[in-house]
Amino acid sequence: MALISCDNLSLAYESKTIVSELTFSVNKGDYLCIVGENGSGKSTLMRTLLGLKSPASGTLTFGDGLLKNEIGYLPQQTDVQRDFPASVKEVVISGCLARTGLRPFYGKAEKKLAQDAMEEMGITDLAKRSYRELSGGQQQRVLLARALCATRKLLILDEPVAGLDPKVTQDMYGVIDRLNKESGITIIMVSHDILQAVNYASHILHLSSKPLFFGKTEDYLKSGAGRMFTGIDFHEKGEGGK
Image (cartoon, rainbow, N blue to C red; front, side, top):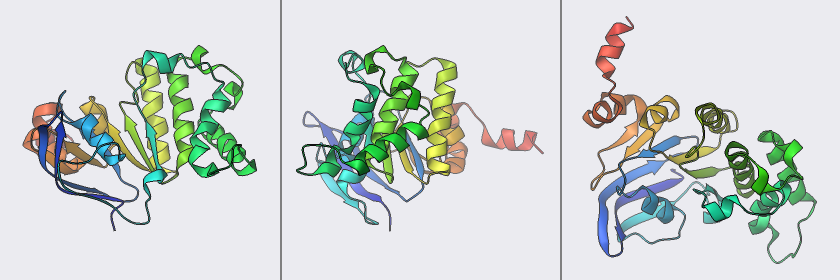
């Protein structure tokens, strides 16, 4: 059974429908990249998947034992958030808040989760540093570690490389790819960078007022939408490689 199933969803913003006839599913281990032009509904879909917004119509269901509080989220940061004065360790362990219930403190289990997540992201040496003093790439690794404290099932990433320089961007894509392939974490990522999306994602959802495409990346590259937006002619590329 799929982790997430969307059937004939319509999404609205300020009472105006921006996406309709949206049907797709996400299975365990998938790496889905959601692409589309500005205003195509990518952010609205993210908020809907996170339970922050209700669809205008259609059905959204969670399966395979996935609970809404088992979704880790890495949002786009505002300038105020980038200037947050907490330590790295404090930011990371805050991802465990949903696990503490009514306890007003973090226990050994939460502290170990935070330590393991920092090690996985290669930021243990930054634990005592102030978050606001870090580079953009370091901050994104901290936020990924925080999301990993919330879940090992599904991560939703909203433009995780926005504003990063090319080298750091490639490093971040590599980190996300390892989380998917080596740790088995399902990824849903919003991106404006279609060329990078097709390099890493197993599936593509291309949004417009009606979805232009949903399916495997290899099929996207063969589709009209894929050829138009990537500039890659899959057939010519294939023939050239023979």
